[in-house]
Amino acid sequence: MQRLTLRSVADILSLPYDEVIDTRSPGEYAEDHVPGAVNLPSLDNDERARVGTVYVQDSRFKARRMGAALVAKNAARHLETYLADKPAGYRPLVYCWRGGMRSNAIALIYGQIGWRVGVLEGGWRSWRRLVQQALYDAPFPAPVVVLDGNTGTAKTALLQRIRAMGGQVLDLEGLARHRGSLFGLTVGESQPAQKGFESALAVEMAKLDPARPVLVEAESNRIGEIRVPPALWSSMQAAPRIEIAAPLEARAEWLTHAYADVTADPAELAARIAALQPYQSRETIEAWQKLAGERDFLRLAAALMQGHYDPRYARTRLRQGKPALRVYASDSLDDAAQDTLAQRIAADLEGYFSNR
Image (cartoon, rainbow, N blue to C red):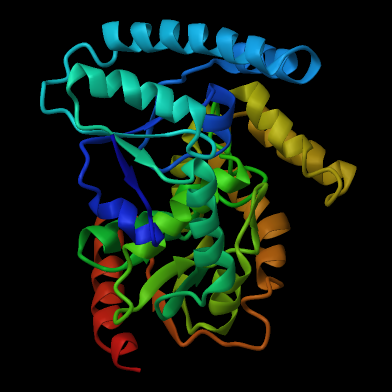
């Protein structure tokens, strides 16, 4: 058994192990984990609670005996299922909450098999400290350029195309699993916990080349329920801003395509329109609900942008007192137009912006 100490978030990108195994309960894993780690719990949520109760209310010895039996049972199940096909040379790195009993017990079993197993020193807590240092104690590691534009200008899609062309991109909406508005949550999905978002963000930041600009979509300091860490938010506020401009008709067409998961569910669409009631008159909400009921999604998208999103977006903090450094205008937002826009922006990122 080897013990591994991480010195920075970037260390996770070059581990001498085949896989990272989180041995904590599913509830702990769901809140946050080392990105890419697989959850093979030594105790499930209920088992962990029961052992903890015995530990506090009865006897530490009884709790440890109960825990050992449960850990052995769960380890056997994982060995007969997920781990059944792992070869003799398999090298797992395991961790629990603080690098203690759960990970050490699992590592002992794996080591007896003959696998070269490592244990993360300090467990998840040591990982969390590194994430906090990267996001809250250090400046953002690369120069930021903000990609702006009214709702429906395909900013997120453009980010993906620019990334595919080799541009350096940070997709905050993708990491937050939210499209940045009351309509933003994908049907059937939920956002990660704040800690989970921060772990994923810290890893993406560790991959950045500090000598190249990174393109970030214009956001507020909250994406749904997720808070953007202050160092990144400060960099976004100070960053040069470029803007996509497209006519309302093109934006409405793109928005209808981008939110097809919402428009395919009439009840979901009605609920999301209703959620705008604190900001709009009853008559306006009724008119939008009527368009939704008639499935006139192009007119609905245009009405939502004109009556709600465009006015609110014009007041966002990233736009106050700061004109766009460059505006990229396009009459269309179809695939060909997006390719052209992405090529222009990617070239400018590696040209003008990288030499500022």
